[in-house]
Structures are given as structure tokens and as C-alpha cells.
Length: 371
Image: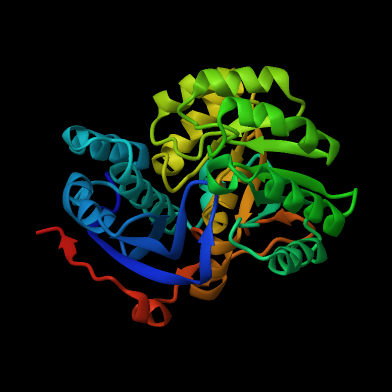
């Protein structure tokens, strides 16, 4: 008996404005696009999403949907392999992988609902909870805005926070360090302080700023140089005291395997890397290399992957995504005491998307279904 079959795949994109223009070292933006995917099978609906361009919608409803429609929904890894094969000539890295991730996540949600299990239970829980860190601190913020955000995180009991540095592609080291000093003043000595340069520095700039960051107790230096510069990451990792980290732009297993020797902690974005199916393989490769992994963004989804991963360090409670998920995802998680705890008793993820509330932000989509 094959069990329930995938009957319909639907996707929709929503472009949600940020409260104000935001920026990091190498990019600025004024909106966040969320692409939601629903998989219908056996009387249940699985939900997944990615934060990517609306071009993911026709990918999800086109070649990816055709690869899984009419096939058993409970065999999620098999459906993943079929999707991977279907997009071979489209180019796996980038938007194709984001769309695949959203469909894979929706498949796991549907399968878990059919079995009346939480997604984290179906993946196989290792932990009851996962540590989180507050993330935002955009270089576009005024100091009073940065202060307010940091105080919000620490006031909620989050004992680790991250801010952006590398302003103007690393040409504002004075302002970078002033902001890091201000952050340390706000959070005090007992809270861990992380920085993220988003690949904005050259190797020389990163080396020059590292001693000052060390004096301020920075213990996490994310993408001090481009994540494509594996030799640079490895060299800096061997020279500075803070953990050198990267991986958020990884879209396939081979990318992460190449990065393992170059970093202290491997970052994985479950909405980019290929969903929960590929996440598990990446985490295993990292563990074989003696590394922890950290979940990049999409906190409501990442928490389920995190508690099912032996070598998880923490997940990123990213300000933009928290704002969207708390407003538009019914049942979205909130960190308690600096930790997130997915409910293992709730079927699937335990939440639904508030489509009516999101409708004003919809970009538009079509429907693909089994004939």
C-alpha cells in the first residue's frame, strides 16, 4: 500500500515592506519576500515557505509539482530525489533550491500531519529545545534604534545577540567599532556578542578589525570575508580568537562539504539548502568534520530542524523574519529564556498561514494540480 498521494501543489508570493529601509555591509532592501507552498494529500495540507524572489512560485507549481503529483506523500526523501532530478538542467543553486526547499518543508509537514506527529518528531528529536540568538542590528539603524533592539532581546531573556558590521563594504571601520562598543555597553558583559560582516571586508580589513573585536568580547565573526573565499575564511579562522562562521548561501550538499574545513561553525538555511531532507545530510557532514551547525533565519521552521539535530549550536532569531512570522503565522514560536521549544504534540509544524491577512501583500500565483 502506497498511502496518500500528493494531489495538489499551490504557491504564493508575498512582498512585505520593512518598517524602514535596512542594510548590511553589501546589500540594502526595503521589503522581504516570502514564498509559501501548500501540498495537499490525503485530506491534509502541508505548509512550507522560503524567503526568496517570487520567481520561486512557477518553479514550485511547475517542474517541482510535476515531479511529485500523484506520488506517495509519506516517502518524502523519494519525492525530494524526484524534484532534484526534475530541475537538473535548471541549475540547482539559487532560486531553484529555494523553491525546492519550500516544497520539501511542506511535504514533511503534510506527512507529519497524516501521521498525527510533530515535524520534529517525524524528523527524530534529539533535544527538547534549541538556543537562539537575537539578530538584526542593521548598519542603517541609528544608535537609538540599535539600543532599542538590543534591549528588547536582552529584556526577553535572550543571552546572545548579533549586529551587522562592514558598513560601506568595509570602508567605515570607525563606525563599525563605535557600533560594536555601543552594543557592548547596552548588553553588558554577561551577554554574548556576535558580529556579521556579510562578506564586506577584505582579508586585510578583517585582520585589522579582529583585535578590537576581541577586546570587546566578540565571540562570533560571521562572514568576515566573502563566503566564496574559502582560503580567506580558513586563514582568518586560524588567526583570530572569535569563531569564524559562514554557510547561509549554501544551496547543496557539495557546497557545505567544501566549507567544513574553512569555518568553526557551519550555518545552514533550511529554506535555501534543500529543505529538511538536505539539512539532515549537511548536519551529518558537519558532524563528521567535528563542527556544530547553526540555523540561519526562518526561525519558526528552523526550530523544528534544530531540535532534530545532534550537533546544533543555536538558531538565528532574525528580526525581519520574526516580525513576519509572528504577524502572519498562526502558532509561530516565541523564544522563552533564550530558547525555542517546538511542541512535539502538535501535528505537523503546528501552525497555519494567515492568508487573508497576507492578501494585501500578495504578488500572485497560479495552481498546479493532478489531472
